[in-house]
Image (cartoon, rainbow, N blue to C red):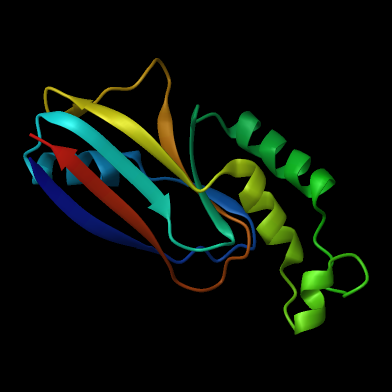
Length: 140
């Protein structure tokens, strides 16, 4: 059994956006030399997400509108008690909770074993500073 670890640094200038990181994850799987196993991709920050879905701009716009309706940006401490700590990102924590922390993809014959149209995305909900993404490949 072998394992391989790689970190990506994301620095998204927008407060909320989605970045396709599939190519970077595929490169990490190749670098790992794992032929059969699993690949974990984890957003290592509590206001960011990693998720799998279609790379379709309309869907991404729908996500942004839907997330903003569920947890609207409001820096005041009246909507989000978290903002009473001096932060202004209470909404970002909620958006991350909905979109998820990580994904796990099977590695088969040295490649990510995706279903049709699946891609891996980094979701940013409180951008404008560097954050890390962990890629961990484990297998044989």
